[in-house]
Length: 562
Ligand SMILES: [Zn+2]
Image (cartoon, rainbow, N blue to C red):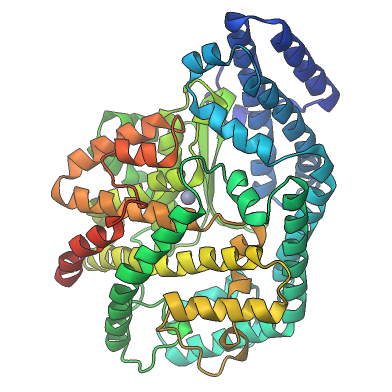
């Protein structure tokens, strides 16, 4: 039975010994079954995993909804502690399936992609690295805690790092510069601690990679990201496309931006402001956005309409910021309830609209593919996931007047397109940096700062830091959470953005056609790897030579018209 409303959802707590016994029973049954019997075991395993994922997702969400609730926090920490044990049990199942004499029959039922993903999971884990996994998790937590400890005094008030970020959009350049000075002064003060945490992370990741038989962490990092249809040579060629074809265009766009802002030179703290006016402001609060989005989904077709009507009716949105709520925005899901859920921290700015359409893209994909045959196929790998979210951001642009005045809507659309292009060089710089770091684990912190400076010269040549010593010495990357917490994730956003820009181009000629292909892509969920999914949606793989060049050429006239 699935629930009628989120408030009815209350998954029972799990007993890890009982769960372990269920896994042992499944492993025993698998060893004895024939082809049809093994398929039945996989189905039972999948039902168990949906149950466990619902439990985990619910506990994490409840904690994020109120981080001050002691019981929610205790449950969340316990679930975190149990996670490696569950991963271990899943890896045992995957290992058994990979070596099963009935593999052909199982592949015929579920497809081969799951086996490729399991190969990655098995290659990224061994019980002997568990201790180092815990060490890595502690270092990641130390990074989060260090950043959360920031108390920045600015204009007579105390701010967190997230709080001071809003001054980056202040129309007064002196305010922006001063706020940046306070922020980077704090990073400089704690620079040795940031360097030490990262140094320790690089060492422990390298050690785990060695223990699993990899030359360095790059190979293990790719397995952890479940990359089955491209390798680091492909990523390297994509970055070359960015250098050759996009960096020159973004340099032009940055110069136009500097001219519009009347700044010479334009500094890093000015880059967030695309024109001199106040940022576009939504015409109403969150309930207004939620109501306005109804017609937007209705215009896209019956299925988007049914999706949106259902998630609103079932209370699967928690959007407004409030004291005690955990930070950020995400889409999660309760697989055994066939329901996605969107979490946000809306505060009345234009970013609410961006986040709303982004996370609803993830939620819509999940909703359309929620009955796919295996847990693996409910979501795809991350670079494909972000096509759904970034794609919907572009597909909703023609309807953005529902949220903004006509004049602000025009500015929002232009900012969105320009911002998407400007993001990619930074994104690949973050990725390239990580390759350099993990290929030379013996490097000193100073050498890593020099590596980042090299990345800035290559991908962000317009960047100026004025008299801010810490970022000028190559320290900017320390504010990028993914570099500490999610290695090699960042390229996924740039690959997805390259696909989303193609969706935008298609939609500017044939909106309904682009919507139909988008919906078909969402339906596939994670049943295939990234490039297969992209190509099936009529997109060119970003790894194809000439892909980015063609996208840039097609966008130039639209940028001039905007
Ligand atoms: Zn996303």
